Image 1 (spheres, helix red, strand yellow):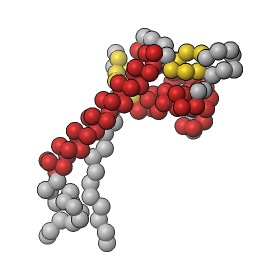
Image 2 (cartoon, rainbow, N blue to C red; image 1 turned 180 degrees about the horizontal axis):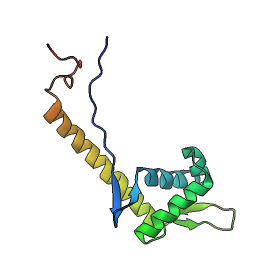
Image 3 (cartoon, rainbow, N blue to C red; image 1 turned 120 degrees about the horizontal axis):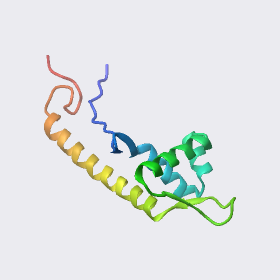
Image 4 (tube, rainbow, N blue to C red; image 1 turned 90 degrees about the vertical axis):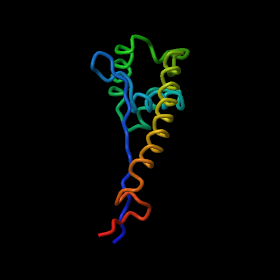
Length: 125
């Protein structure tokens, strides 16, 4: 029987007034809008309805107190990230990367020598 080794997993979000203002889902949605140029395209790629995606954007904007999307051109031209939306996405992604790297390094230091966490995954009995 092959044993896998434990892995560190983390979730990161920003709260305002005790409510989730921006997290992994928010970042994925903004990243999707940035890549597809539309909220509908981002929602589809994430398996969300347009209505759910639009509701999430409204909550983000309400809680952060700023617009994260701006309409591009006419009514059917789609959306793009506002300057604040781009800044939040970039800052969140940079923070998430640096915290993940440091957490994985510390996990290895603190847990690496413990049974089941050693490379090979088996504890001696």
